[in-house]
Length: 433
Image (cartoon, rainbow, N blue to C red; front, side):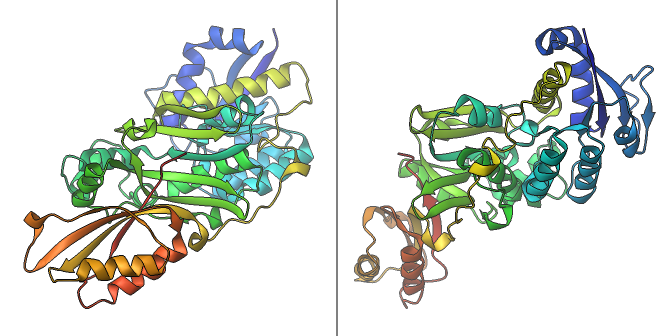
């Protein structure tokens, strides 16, 4: 049985999990790969005393892995943008295959990396970069390869999902965020999680694999969850919706929607029921309909599961000397089309609106008139007399699906009314049909 040698760069949470699972399940993995997969070198900024490397060479210079002639596959687990990009490009230049869990690097530098890999005829695999242990990239690229994908939507950041789950009990955002940090779900600097940047990285990658477009992270619309309140979350529930922080990509004749933002989802839809730190992605294909993939989106061995699945795929190719490759983004290069990413003004959605209005005769009529003027139909309206305070009362409106440009114009006009105080709260809503 042939040996395939793996060099691991980065021995943090995922790197440690990858090493441990490779060692623990070595015989099982060899049986599935058709070859022995051996860790032949490890490099990391610091050694971990809890991981027994035995006789495996260890260094603090990650380029020792790249330059080792015995290493067949470089596993990049250092994270970040620039240093990881340089490491991966150096590995490709050496003719080595690459496995990475780095969604930020792939989303931002993936087009360049894949072009370099194509020229050297090496594999760059990145399953672990999206949704941890959920095999969503394989599912889109391979399992759903016969389908024209109409849209996909995902809870692709566990920290945000945990926060919104806890806020349903009436807890404030800041309180739950602090708890998430104490539990290790959120980083000390949680910006990428709560502002949607992490989800936008992952959405960019999934959309490219689903729709055959270049990676275009810079064009993704990103909106976080920091401004959400328990009040709006509970009133959305009263209307039959649950608030989730979703990444959404939808194909339309005019172009592609690519957006991350808080979203109202019908409570009976399967993705609305995914709580806590779990991730979930729904893909709508023309042949199969809606399928959902759910599981842990992070964690040492959950993410290692996806890393090693990619290592096995690469090892199978190496061990049999095959030149066959699954296209990096699921489409042959000649089939990649640079579809327009639609600006947010042109996306279509339903909307939850909360208007802080003075309790005066005719206010509702003025609001309804503005919505009608902009071609916006009202699905439901909610106003509770018990919430009257200091002469002001919240008015909750749920609209039918319209173009965002229409709702922006209507909101601006409503905010200019003397009977409306402050900004109108707006949350997009999706029925996923």
